Length: 156
Image (cartoon, rainbow, N blue to C red; front, side):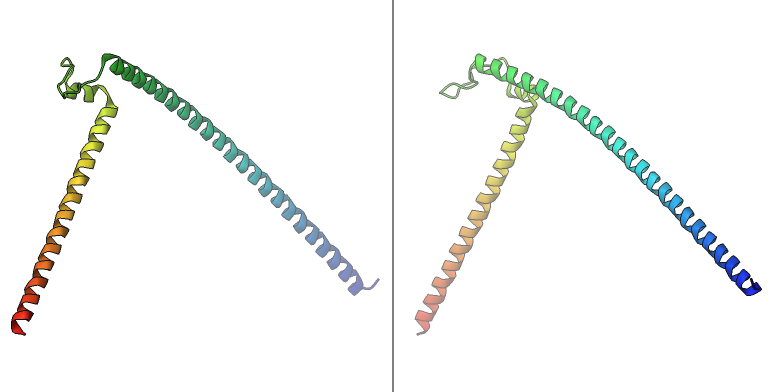
C-alpha cells in the first residue's frame, strides 16, 4: 500500500472515529438534558400538587368559617324573627332594649346594608339634582325662545 493510500485510510478512520465520538457525546448530552427536563417537570408537578393541596386546605378552612358564620347568622336571624318586628304598624318602636347602633355592631351584615342604603340615597340625590338642572336649562331655553319670538314680532 502506498503512503498516500495509507494516509488516506488513517485520515478517514480518524475522521470516522471523530464523527462517532461527536455523535455519541451529543446523544449523551441530549439524554442528560431530557432527564433534567423530566426532573424539572416532575418538580413542577410536585410544587403544583403542594400548591393545590394548600389551596384546598385554605378553601376548606374558609368554607368552615363561612359555614360557622352562616350558622351564627341563621341563629341571629331566627332569634330576631322570634323576638318580633322592630316597628309595629304605627311606626312606634316596640323593642327598646336594643338600640339601632347595637344591632348594627352586633351584625356586620347590617353595617353593609347601612352603607348600601347610604350610597343609594346619595345616588338618588345626585339624580334628582341632575334632573332639576336639566329642567332649569329647558325652562331657560324656552324663555329665551319666547323672548326671541317676541322681539321678532315687534320688529316685523
